[in-house]
Length: 403
Ligand SMILES: [Zn+2]
Image 1: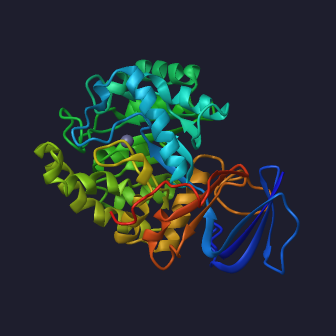
Image 2 (image 1 turned 135 degrees about the vertical axis):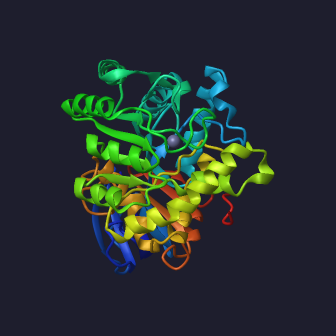
């Protein structure tokens, strides 16, 4: 089975300049060739004519809650298991149709993400490739505890990591600090202690598994980095040079999830608790500075939407790129964060993230040019995953361009 794509504008995810009028030949689910277009191109079974559009790698969202309901009251954790499972099936389809071909899940009640991952892998339901954490690990009563294993002390944390891995985790999610949304969690206060974080890192790395830490606030971020965490999620209040220096020195990733709190901070009319609005607004104030400093310092940054949090629906996770650009990234930097960056963080840089020969054929076609206007990233007309068309320009799925 072969496919030919004619790209009026090609952004390949490597960060090099866009190229005009290019061809991509796909064979057996992989990119066989990328070449300047000439006449009709080589013969193929299928043809996508995107000469008036932009072709990019499928987007990678490294921070997703697949079964959460993005309603303003964030009440999903109380939804029954069956409802969350159905919601997850719906959300995974929405994400794929909107151009996200790979995700990392970071906290799902009942480890439903493992079931979604396996169902997608078996072709039972449509959805992105998935690196899944299952439940998170939090201290007793800590942030995210309602969908986590509660663990106190290095021994219990070690046991929790082993439990996650036994059950099928591809990545470990830790809650190093409080957060904006859990009522009991003052945002930014340390929760899991340094010795607990170190035990988790030691155990997961033994298995070759990476760890993501929900970390807000100076001390929590610094503790997570000192313990050797691979990615800092949110990093709100990362306004200090020490944290950013350590981030760069460790080669750790920052997943800023800007949209998650920006939507809440500006959402007084939507029925979100005033406590969450106040917390998010102060995070917004600090994080704008921290994110910009991290970008300037050359920190490794990947795109994570935190889809599932209030007002943050899975079908529009691409909006995070708009927030990244608003807060100081160039459109190309944001696109690389959402393609090659995500692939590298997932440890899948050899497989996905760029449109180069040998890679899996995960690509999207968008109308317009996201380098001129990053909002065009939401104008998806085609989605191809592993060389198979999952959405074509004829499908009547509408995604509003405005946010
Ligand atoms: Zn999250």
